[in-house]
Image (tube, rainbow, N blue to C red; front, side):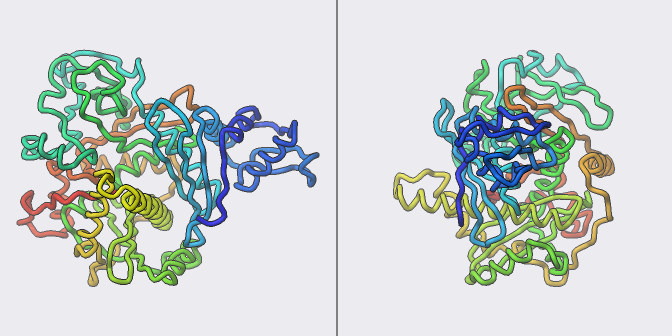
Length: 478
């Protein structure tokens, strides 16, 4: 990254002291420096010319949310670096906990401005913390029959094929933490359940708590500590509607991505004119100067909400990174895909460095990722279909409330329902939700989901003979 800047717990401590809705003043030279740092990255601005005399105020549209995010720096002793990427357009922020009882995990975020990248990074951290299981997250303990029709069958949500479930031990060893299949009896007998709310009519349904939350096995009283669910459909935002809109769009994105990947479907390129006069065009030009090729594929499917894949290769066709984005606005979907691709590019660079340093002692996950990159770069569906033309989705408004309604309606059209779990935690202070849609596909190889077959057939991407035997089981590692 170019021109790195560091934020630490000191910035978080000071931010937590300031009101989000009134002017504030520096009380010391340390305060002045901290305020100047936060002004440089776009969170505050001086109301007077001289910093030593200035009254300061928050500069973002959601000051309370910005204050809560920055306060996490102090609460969790985070070290955050932010700088401009090599494409000279996208900002990258990366944070890691300096100390703590949990294993150290890195969190990152990207944006077209420094404040966007920091919000994305700290939002990812807030999402992770909000997702972790706490005592009290389970509202019932009983067996499946005890909830009758109000219980959602967990196997329907997870989507593993019967053949995969039969081979669960071998696949769990093979996947080594990338994904895992619960034991056949994981949801038998009395287990913990958590209530989720139907998006259509707000009725209450129930899911196993082990599916809803992170690190459940390590934090709850259960017999199986080996299976860990993922955070698919989790999101944070400055408001609850913003968090829910992002969670729903993530599920749509991963449904389209899973269908494209496991069904091996070639999709059209995004028209270059879409990015005329957009800031992202500068990043694409920089990639060309760096000797790299960036392909933007339109994965939009039957839900008719734009989904984009950004695929980066070198001049020899070797895959360097890929990312995905979904938004009602196609340009914003492209930006989201490129930003995620940039995060994946950074993760791959870190994996390469760790393998180079550790040699034979390198982590299995890192070695698997680098081996996978050598296998997938020339798969046909990573190239655009030359005779295909991207469909222009219907024009729709795209504020958060309208996005929620758009996804709800598109799901209704295909016979699916979304369920919502509020994950907001008082100690985090950031709106967080998790959305579930039984029947939508995953970016991981959950090969029992009908849409993997039905959607390519219905859209005539494959003919009627296409079936489960034609699905790829090569995982998509992102």
